[in-house]
Image (cartoon, rainbow, N blue to C red; front, side):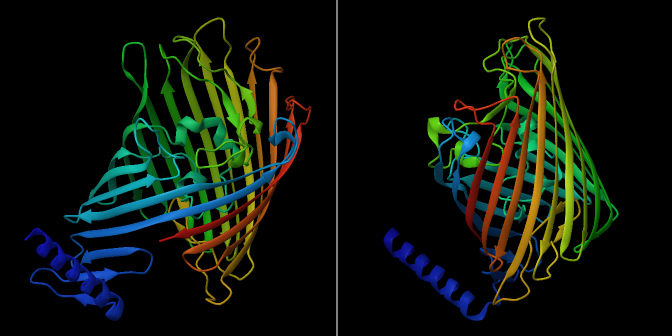
Length: 432
């Protein structure tokens, strides 16, 4: 009997899928009409928009090759890996409740102990234009972070974010965030997160984030965007890893998503140390300024970030780090980058035969100062990265990218004495 019912269900599901492909229209039931969309994933929704369910995802397959400072010996190495392999489920229930679950099969988000979740959240939208989000998600900090990894211009976000990986990065725990808009030009968010890290008394480390955006020009191809960010956490009585490290735009030196350079991969250590005892450091603050301007196919953006980590033990010194980037991008085929208040989005090809072609250049600069004896060889370590790349948006699902990366480091070097390096990264992306 069970087998019979299952066969009937499978047949019905198949018939529904075939009819959806054949007619791409509305299926009428004894309740609300159902609309099925198959473009860009599978989406099923009631016509009254009370309920919706969508299955999507993204796959980013990368290959990189690099040498010089990027490796311990300075010799050339390469890496092939899945940068992201997300399966995403999202939807709406009872009009005012939105949910999103995104799991990373490449294991670059989350952890084995807490699950490889990129996001698992529920959002209440009934106080429009105010939203309340709860669950696991990245704290709101920065323009490039607000832009989906599917549509950031370069394959890797700017190196300045490496200074504040706790402020906007993938760390386990749960949070609540209130965000909303005021008119068409103002966006703001405030979030509180309890991270998966405890002090000596078993209390989780709390983190507070603020972001505000003013965009007097906010239409795609006609954008003026200004933003401020702030994040703070308290590390009192908490064992902590204060290391500030950067891959300098070359993920292949060390990644969890597959093959990397292994022990040969070299990451820049700017400041800090690992495994420091509780009471070593206390207040940790991050500040950020963001700006962007776009006119037609041309876009310019940049961010400045500053971090201050206060030492509580006389054996350690305060850590200060700053970073910034500037980026210019131009779409050769004339398309403008889509903009939604607070973030950029996809470039949608106008010509279905040749797609959209974009060239870009980005310069990243990071530096840190740590006067603690024996931590780093000098008080001021700097890293500089040039990124020159080409993106081909074949269609709205497929994007092929290539970027040349050139780095130079001051007051640090690899085991072979190199303080500069070169590399290239290629990516094939499919989203649905």
